[in-house]
Image (tube, rainbow, N blue to C red):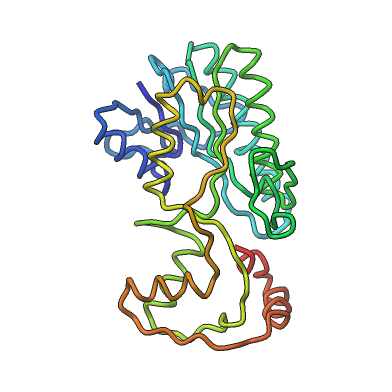
Length: 270
């Protein structure tokens, strides 16, 4: 029996549907009551997981605060409460309930914002989280490793990059909406290269981690085979949407200045 936290989120929902096609029973754990889900409420260090984890063998922990773009204390407190303390609480109670394995969906941002010398991050790369979100994920990873060892619980950590696919949200959805409207974009001069992963590939990998005992204790960095630049991504999306798109040159340093003024610098880097 599998449990998925954050099962109504982008990754969690895709994972649930995928597991059904494989004949695997899964309990959807969500914040609010939804059809066949188990409502847990807002998670924190005080959440009681015992009923939710009854007869559960494997937990896929997708639930988290994903993006905090400002530095207000309330936002930082939310990251600590959900991404760190709730994870600690979940692992401790999972051990008590006899759960065998926890699979934690972390983030490639734990490794840093830019890989050294334009090389890819690897499993041997040193963690260098920089923003509050990445730091909270890194601390959650450390908690899982320490507490799983104490409680006799297997663990797997997965650090995906930007995930795309049907029902995607956030900045990726915003980009799709701009392209669908045919709005010219000042991205032609952007010369970057980033790894991404299709949500179907990610959930298939999670499925393999559920079944394979060799995944125990490992941290995985996964992505689609080839990195892609922002202009290439825009052209690919426009092609699939069958929408003409016009990309024009605009100095990158001016975009950075404008985003800083508008307090949208995180959107630019995302």
